[in-house]
Amino acid sequence: MLELRPNCEYCDVDLPAQSEDARICTYECTFCATCADEVLHNVCPNCGGGFVPRPIRPQTERRNGVSLGHQPASTRRVHLSHAHDEIAHFVAAHRAVPATER
Picture 1: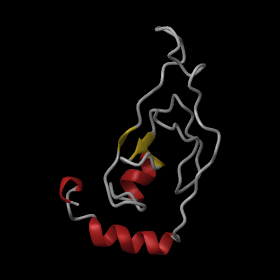
Picture 2: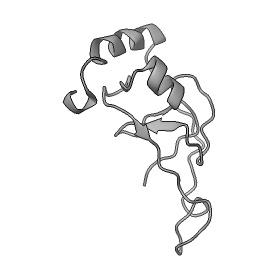
Picture 3: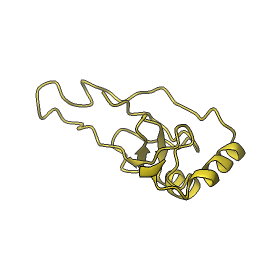
Picture 4: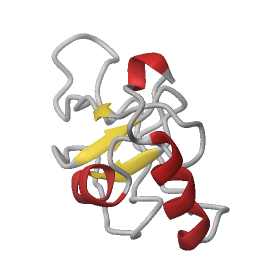
C-alpha cells in the first residue's frame, strides 16, 4: 500500500492526501511540485530517481473497503537526512542525466 506522507521532505509544506501538488519517487520519497521541479530538478536527493505525481486515494468508499477511511494517509512527517548544500551538489551532479538512465 502506497504511504501517503503528509509533507514535503525538503520544505516541510503540508501535502494532504488529496493534494495534486505532491510528487513521489519509486521509494515513496515525497516532495511538493515546486521543490521537485525548481530545487531538485527531478532528481530525488535520497535515491537519484525521478518524480511522478502522487496518486489521489479516494475519500469516498466507491468499492467495499477501499478509501481513505479504510487506508488513511500517514501522519508521520518525514524530513531529509542530508543538508541542503549537500543535496544541491548531488542534484547538480545528476540532473543532466535523464531519469530513465540514472
